[in-house]
Length: 460
Image 1 (tube, rainbow, N blue to C red):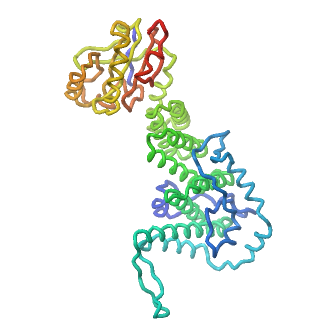
Image 2: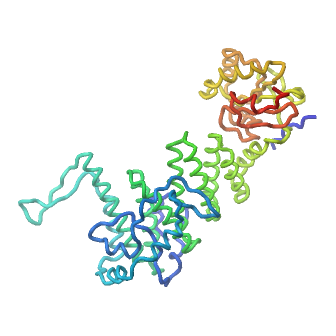
């Protein structure tokens, strides 16, 4: 008997402008009085500040991030070097450089440097002031061309990067300057991200090194949290920009899991990232990555509104190899679908919507594959996610879809709220499930051209 489905204080304004974060700063990185500064890696140094910047670290050599890969909890760089190894290498910088830098004049305060950053960010980007050639001491405004303005923007970004590094070097030991330290860390991450999208691909690897170094120094610090979250934002943006490229969805999913594992106290941001990356991977058919995201979401953040969504998707992703038991519902013509009526023959379940361009593209191959089996050898049931029954009926008639369609009369149970689709976390169409003659699920992500390969010779 088929069972029915039972549906049963860092300045807040500055932080919002930079990251959209939730909480104010915690404690200074690594505690007050640390003997060594955190190894934040400079992307490039201006000529006038080269020695001073060397007190933090040398420039890393092309650590371009392709995709983060988890290796026992450590995120590695594309070239295989871990951030820990990079920091250990950086710690070998010569004492001669350190001594030279320590003797340099240190006039500007951290507050003054932050004011310079604010000025660089707030001043017009298409106008510069320069001295008048014929009037010493006087200045004039010069309008920049679009190309010049772009170069000016990049120049300012590199200046901001260098100023942020200087602030970090000045404030990391001083608990009274924790706000400035945190401000500089956030600004550093934001600037690296902007430079990455301006074409400086090396910045991704540097962001990763920053995040790992800060986490190693103090896993509970605001700086560690925000630098890792900025890296997560970078991978999410890249995944969204390259939404058909699975490697970026994988990178986003893995970085989301790293963030959730490292900072479980960041409930909202971790849960949102896991749900978003899980769904992105699910839509692209990367079921293993999706499952890992949803399993972590369900285990670590069960009280969030995203947990129920994750459990529904997991219900679907764990069906393969199991008997399909909970499935059925009303049809668009007043009938009812019950699994017991389809026992003994393979069953194809098609989740679709008339608005899905992918489904329209699949139709020729889908019909051909169904015809190859023959109606006497294959049952087909549709689960329609339209909201308008007229649209459903017109499409069925126009394309001669002669199989039953699960569709609810109640408007509130249509579309994504279709009870069958919601129960199994189906949000993207089309999806094709193939169930063997024995009632065991063969696939929940089948392709129309591969139906026969998923069944046994007898079932074919």
